[in-house]
Length: 337
Image (cartoon, rainbow, N blue to C red; front, side):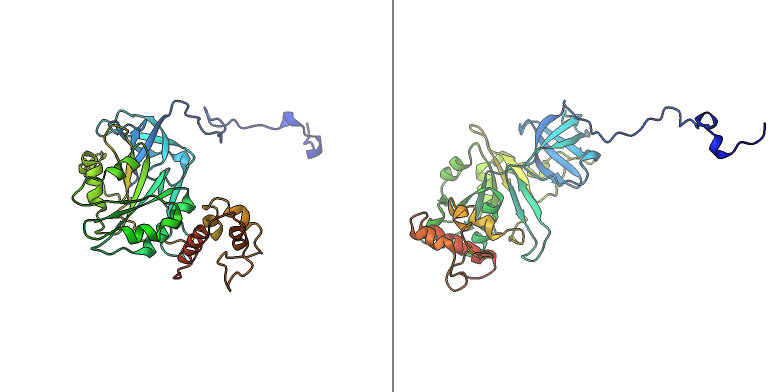
């Protein structure tokens, strides 16, 4: 039989080469991991995440991140799902296969021009801003920037004034009275009972400059946990940790968590917009919708038509709140009020 033209060929003339034995098409579906156990990340160290299984500080598990999570940042305070060996025995590893949606995020940038946000702590309910009344003296600029970061991230700020045995806290309590923010004063010669009550049953992040007495507070609030921060379970080479952020469980009754953040000395606020701050003051966000385009909400000669002035004049908000808001807006912009 002579050769046939290509127009005369049909599927019976085509030889299909079989694929490799046992091969099957790849699926983009990720495993659901219905059996994953809930845990809270309490420390991060060189590609290993230390987790409290079920939020129990007595059941510590070391885990690695599953490949399907990619490079998603997982930080202290995150709630995750674990599979694999969750016994917590030495030299064992679980896998983090799920990251739960966050309820709050404490972020910062390296400076006010850096577009890259760094997530410091996730799911904290409170930001405890620790400031000494003396030795070293208070730094209102740092306090203001912490307030901005708290409001923008959905955390409730609490101002903790230490070393009240060296100087009176009255001036600073008055200075921040317009923020409707709890202000707690502590002394070296007394137990921090008011602060302890405020922390009970909550996840709280602590920030403060070196020398303000934050470590002293942590040691009093969680003595057993504080002593163990250098002994978080490691893998392969004994027990080691070099992370700068650690969550420590408060003792019973009414257990809570304190997240120590010794590496944070300043907050770059490049990620915070004026609208983020306005939204933190009840009722002001709706009023700001009546402002002209590109209003910076500063009032005066800079924003003479800012509707927030009218809102306050008509009794919709207090003048003290507006002054506090504008104080933070100026601080966010790196300007003195």
